[in-house]
Image 1 (cartoon, rainbow, N blue to C red):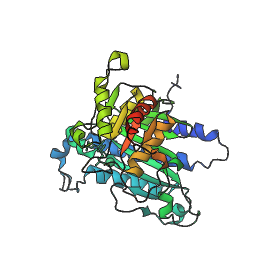
Image 2 (cartoon, rainbow, N blue to C red):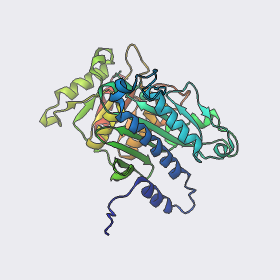
Image 3 (tube, protein in one colour):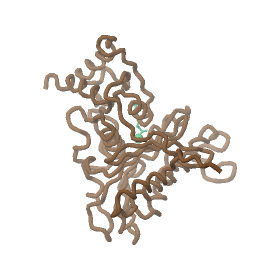
Image 4 (cartoon, helix red, strand yellow):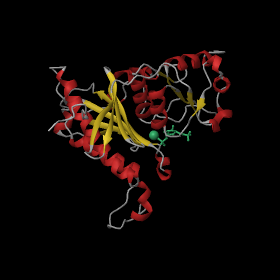
Length: 338
Ligand code: AHM
Ligand code: MG
């Protein structure tokens, strides 16, 4: 029998990586596998989302007599469950929970990492069959091993992330994660239920032709941002255009596309929400880390996202992220009139 050795599963890949560091304990690999397990479970439910009217609406009892939970709550519980029962995570922060959760049991108190996540980003898109995703961020705790983790473990700047990643539930389901050494993407093979390495060593093209922004908010943006958007629209062949506008309203899908093909994604502050909408700890920091490792950049308009000292779990920030040269061009407009 011939075995197709071109296929490398997520587990095989993380083990191979681990072997390059003889002193590594394997806790990070184990954490990444725990996340993959939760992702597979969430994927099954996301794929059934269209059946909700048949199986029962969220908050009702389904035909099997079970409580039907909203998918984002389901996703949150799956993530919390695998991380609490694994051997690598001392506590979590989640978009779905008011405060950080310290697991505080013997195994967790001896675990090296804390994880922050948005279990189902873009969940407003579930009903209409549009790609949604999970975003996560991993930090090495700074509190001593053997004790419960503390708030300071979670409120570290993004530049201290050990790993970050996302899962996109799209036309296929993909798990992308970054460590400082690189970004790799794995596509779920539903036939065997395994994430298989499909996009090794992802690099964000330095130039792109796509800009992603909510145009409905145009008149609420700062004039420098409006000017940049106008420039995007006026690009000609001679000036590197034409640019295309693409905005799904599901950041995981928008940033994933721009990461693979080149592009810029913006969620600026508006007159209604000067601090922007997106959350620093579990939406912007993980993507900033991934895109920087892939060669791109991410800022809040003035500061590098990864250098912002966080103050609380659900903190928001304006967010600009994407291909390096497009970000550099954006800067020339944002810096005007400073
Ligand atoms: P959510 O965490 O409530 O799902 O909100 C985050 C989402 C992002 O995925 C997306 O880019 C953005 O909200 C879209 O917001 P808007 O509709 O204001 O453009
Ligand atoms: Mg979100």
